[in-house]
Amino acid sequence: MVYLDTRFVIPRYITEATSEKVEAVLLSLSSEKLAISQWTRIEFVSMLSRRVRMREMTDEQALKVFALFEQNVKESFHIIIPTVADFELAIHFLHQYKTGLRAGDALHLAISKNYDAKMLYTLDQGLLKAASILNIPAQLGI
Picture 1 (cartoon, rainbow, N blue to C red):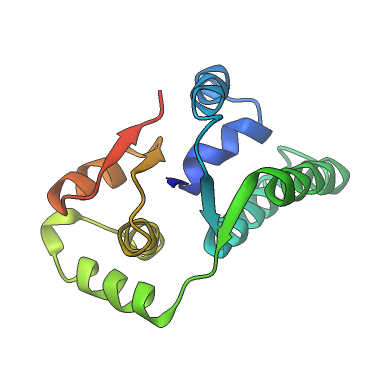
Picture 2: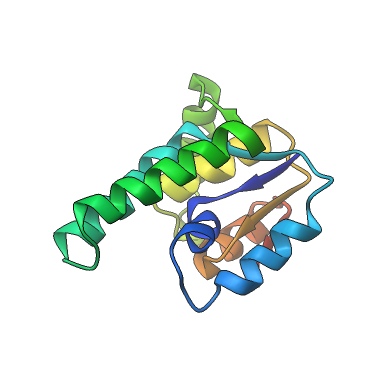
């Protein structure tokens, strides 16, 4: 199983400088079981909400992007529902201050670790650094 954090998933649905590279990585992973978490869904909607508030997209555009995301989630992703063990491990990771982790990233790393993901893909350099410190297999998706 390969776990994708939210920052990696976003360029698949919102055009960014990394969109083509993310798409290429996803195509290369076509034989892998791809996983995201319920937390990813929350962060994704939060990103859309922020873009609407910042007037970077309209309500209608955000709803269309979310509908496409949800359709792809149902068709292509295994959805992990975080458990108490995931939250406890995230707390443990946050106590390792040298990682510089924020709560959401700690939860992504905990889920990846607890579900024995073969690899976590991200576009977040800070998350990648923390994964290295915590010996969690992670790769920059670009």
